[in-house]
Amino acid sequence: MALRKKRNGFAIKFTITIIIIVSIFVGGFFLLDKAIVPRFFGDYGIYNISDLVGMMSTLYSSPDENKLVQNGFTELDIETAEDKLKNIFPSKENSLELDYNAISEGKQKDGVEKPLTLEFSDKEIAGVLDKMLGLGILARKLPDLEYINTIGINILELSINPEILGDGINPESANIHAIIKFDTTDVREQMASEMGTSMFVLDMVIPSTIYITLDYHLEIADGEWVYSEGNIGVNGRNSEQSEILMNILISFIFPVEDEMDLEKLTHEFGNILQSGLDLLGQAEYTESGIVVTIE
Image (cartoon, rainbow, N blue to C red; front, side, top):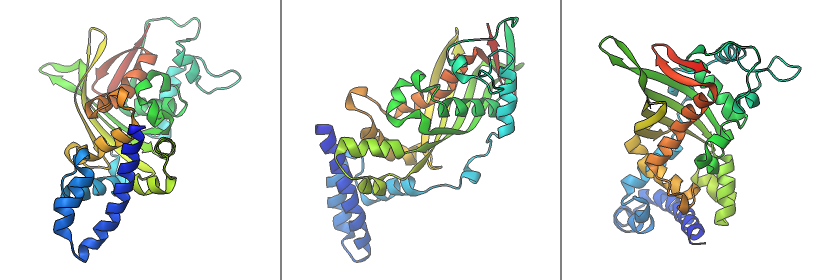
């Protein structure tokens, strides 16, 4: 109940303050900056009008997707990746379509000589991950993201940049860059129910689509994924510009008992890549993407 009151209080305060901001041009900037904003939003890390406007600018600046995404995949990338996977995993019954449910259950074709290695570009991996998310295949692998409904997540871009060594690349260490498109419909409906407020208010506070940019380092040490140096941005802004907004969204979406914070959320989004690759086999980085060894 306390959490509901806190969230509902923020939504009401936010709506009121948007109206108040309009009045800045009439007067009262000093009062708004020094008294009203810190009183209403200090608990959320917003202490002045600059913080509030910056947060709103990040939230409502919807970037041009075609300009934001520089390494996007195509349907051809998906088809190429699936053709490779069909050498190992079965197709749907009476169909030529790859059976992703069989992949999630570890079912492979009979008579395939293993171990077998398959090489994928980062675009091909992105296409497969996006398909797995849309089909709900990865949902069970990402329980900490259940509150945002992973089916509403699309992978738009994935770039894998292996660590460069003196004599080549390190097959177990890479920097990962990803762009995710997040449909907030289910989140807003969930919040409206939990907060006891109308969708009209939440539609004003949270836009229907948010773009999330991830940058992190991912090593494979003794067969285990090791995550570090994570940063998350919203709508094309950097992590510093996005920090206040992300913390507010976390407090809106996740229960207190989850102890979700910015670092953990960045890690959980990064788990999308790890979880998808784990379903396929043992991965190593290459100059052109990833090699998966299937036992």
